[in-house]
Amino acid sequence: MEKKNIDWSNLGFAYQKTDYRYVSNYKNGAWDEGELTTDDTITMSECAGVLQYAQTVFEGLKAYTTEDGRTVMFRPDLNASRLVDSAKRLEIPAFPEDKFIEAVAKTVKANEGFVPPYGTGATLYVRPYIFGSSPVIGVKPAEEYQFRVFTTPVGPYFKGGAKPITIKVSDYDRAAPNGTGHIKAGLNYAMSLHAIVTAHEEGFDENMYLDAGSRTYVEETGGANFLFVTKDGKVVTPKSDSILPSITRRSLVYVAKEYLGLEVEERKVAFDEVKDFAECGLCGTAAVISPVGKIYDHGKEICFPSGMDEMGPITKKLYETLTGIQMGRIEAPEGWLYEIK
Image (cartoon, rainbow, N blue to C red; front, top):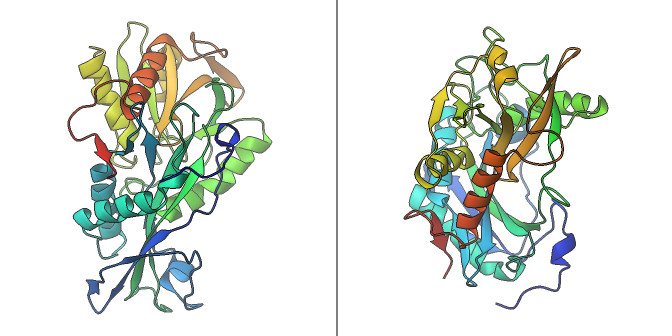
């Protein structure tokens, strides 16, 4: 498919309508066959479950043009299984994993002209989601649902390079013990909005959330997992039942072990340890790794030896290796790249 006439190199990280999206409806206990449509609008009851009780879950993944010209998605099978886990927790009927992969592949294929060319730094962001569409006035699950997938071309998360950011330790809690922090639900992100707006007003880029039970262990930010590097080169990632299992983080852990030969620990990380780490990063779909230069803790600053000018050396190796895999410059583990044909 011929590429659209877009200034790829100057794309921001924002929504831009593309030609097609995928829609499937759940009614009378079953999902229908689903179809592609050019209609980007949604019509539903004013009393829909999603509007009254935030009954919605979503995913985020990307499609890329590789160095040899193929269009690929990165590990969509993990997005499919995570969406099932999220749906079950909110009493939403799970969308079948095989149909999920088929739906996102169809949507990317139909919008292949919007997949940015290799080397532009841009990608096609893919957003699958499910929401309760039938009327609900009592506090209970909806009876009908809609699954949709849309795409939008986005530029690199960082303009001019991945410069380290400054974050603050939040006074708010992101997720409760035994709550919904481990799933990708819209309500989790709604809870973080006031905290991130406040952080931005105070001059910070992001928040660090501590565990709600004791406020002594590192959890995550509003939309990314943490990754630390010790002074002797060990990679450490926090482990908790209320952290979202990031696909990017899981991939970086594999890359650290199998490609770079690094020792990795996935464990509870006490906030008191953070000052002793050499590097810190936030990992997620949007930027792969966002390097952190400083953490502000109620009047005290934690400054990492990697500094505020560029990524630390190990963080940089992890970033370059994973993006090399995604773009086809480095051989990918089996099953990591799903080719659109």
